[in-house]
Amino acid sequence: MRYEESIIEGRNAVTEAIRSGRSIDRIFVLDGCNDGPVSTIKREAKKRDIMVRFVTKERLDQISESGKHQGVIAYAASYDYAQVEDILQAAKDKGEDPFIFLLDGIEDPHNLGAIIRTANQVGAHGVIIPKNRAVGLTATVAKTSAGALNYVPVAKVTNLTRCMEDLKKEGLWFVCADMEGELMYRQNLKGSIGLVIGSEGEGVSRLVKEHCDLTAAIPMKGDIDSLNASVAAGVLGYEILRQREFA
Image 1 (cartoon, rainbow, N blue to C red):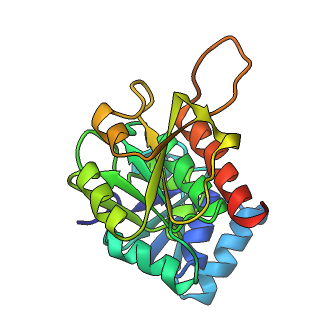
Image 2 (tube, helix red, strand yellow; image 1 turned 30 degrees about the horizontal axis):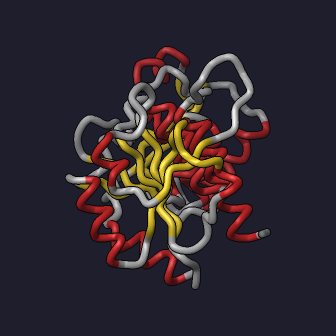
Image 3 (cartoon, helix red, strand yellow; image 1 turned 45 degrees about the vertical axis):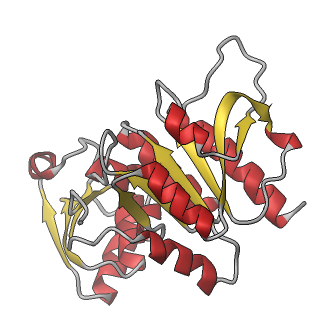
């Protein structure tokens, strides 16, 4: 399986793609644009002999798939999705207990990109997404991740619950975000852990929830009773980081 897109849009995303060593074929930059971030992109591209072409805004708009290219678009060679085994190996290579995000039906590419960015920041070893009824790795996902997609392995699986069963055999246990769960601060979130985040509207599906060992509630004092999926992933992800590193 391969990324659905080979276009990277946005200054941060393109910069991080270059720095990560990703194979970049060519870069298009808005003609006349020479501010700090663009200068950095040109400098990094020169180091790696990547061709940079200056084009009109109309040309960039024509190429763009997200509509938010920030004056920079790169064409990258397609990459394979990671395997779940690659994620486990990444944890092993670092001498750490596995920490994996599992996403149950995330359909908004902005949410997926933001979650991948959070996964990188909290030290997760990878992200697992289902093959069906969920967004894949589109250009918008890559841009929203602000380059984190180049560092966080993303695996796509046919059956999320079967994947969870296999990971339990590897010593992982699972916690999902759920309003009816126990307050996250009262739970032990250390060790080999999978954090399950549900879809924007329905949350974690019944079958996936049944495969979780714990449900964790995020404290809320506002007038609405839910959080954006990527925000929930960030709150719980940082609580896991706190317990793993500082508690």
